[in-house]
Length: 273
Figure (tube, rainbow, N blue to C red):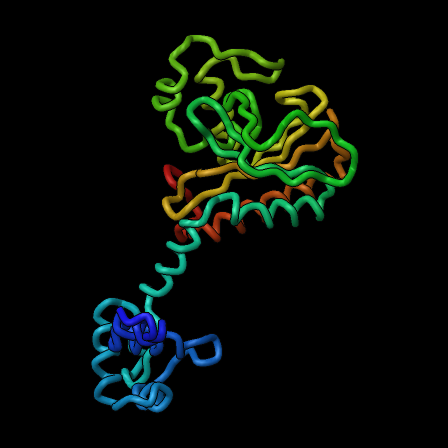
């Protein structure tokens, strides 16, 4: 390559004109211009209408555009939406969840956490610390027993009784507090009640002086992939504060689920429901 050749000239050699035009065409659609005609697209792109028709035919075949009622105009198709959802889903869970944790913390003024399950343990992957004094030994990377924690109960919701028995083959579960379920059957009944309720609130479940509110985070498979929760440093919570805090936690978990492309079916049921 001639060292005097401009970088732009070299780069131009690798550009595919048809692909460039197709992407530019898709970029013309917006919230303001939800539908566009072939004639309008040809005018905007400054290319022959026959070229636009070929581009539209290709994009329509692949699902990136679709005809509106009457067939004279086009709009973006589901393939474009899937690309967007796949991009969001490919982001780290923590990257999407951290801003929601911060917002939730600012709303309820208590520490908030995001955890995932690794076998029989929960792992803290993100946290947002409140301004008020609160000494906690829980940090990102901390592991705790799933069956004995509120957040863990949320992460076990999708498992069948047989799956729980495979995960916990021992006849008696390790006990960490008076609230810890003693058997797999007791654990299963507990998490099914949690699942039906849609959230978990338990005062002093793992530690006597700590209460937790938690809700499930689901992805496009409808399975629980994380638990989002708030930690209250008190054995008892003011009843007047409970309902608003529970609702805020559920809203944050639901928003993160939407970002992960979770869509409940029309009946509102989730996987296995």
